[in-house]
Amino acid sequence: MPRPDENPLARIVEKLGERAHIPDQAIEAILQMPYVDKQLHPGSFFVREGAFAEKCGVLASGLLVYQKTSRNGDRQIFSIKMPGDMLGLESLYLDTLDYNIQALTRCKIVIVQSDLLKSISDEFVVVRHAISRIMLTEASILRELILNIGRRDARARLAHFLCEFAVRTGGTDKINNRSFELTLTQEQLGDALGLTAVHINRMLQLLTRDSLIARDGKNIRFVDWNRLQSIADFSTRYLHSREVRLDV
Image (tube, rainbow, N blue to C red):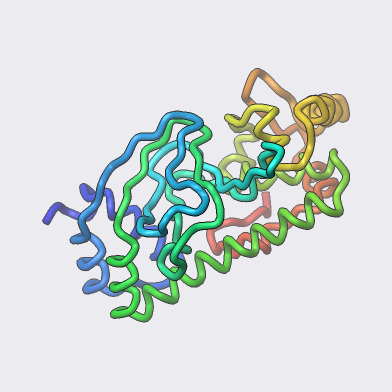
């Protein structure tokens, strides 16, 4: 068996370990699962809505989204997955998935069979608890998105997204360094926030004009993080992460 730091499945161990102390026997069982590395091009699908739920995994690189499409072809992004995030955990408990998992950028995924991870979670209750906490946190982030789209104006909505994206992709390092790369297009931002690309562009210009952010291509720099956070009504509480602090 390869050393844990050489095994791509170590990413799953690491993610579960953020939510619970995983015993050595469970770690060994996870690292011994058969897996497949899959490359996805931008726009391609990992899983389509209605597909039989038989695989899950972890995102090794790139950005993925969970999304649904209306009958008219309008897309609503309701979750953005970043490197290290688990994918398709609902497949451990549901027969089919009711959403699409689609690549925003070039991605690499480490895939395992859902029934194998489910068997490990059945054998080791702490693994099941860790998976449950991950899924509950995903539900918490979704609740915040519903509030963001339903009750915040466009400027606050975009400000909140920028705060969350920076924290989730790098925590306080992103804020201390005051800048990060926003790899989403304005159309993709609109699909995540229920706005048109034109409206997103206007709000980016407004945040820039108000000296809250500065932009250089895809690079976003925080000019006034504290004021941006206040406008966004942003708190990290809903992320349920011990690693994230904003006392900067």
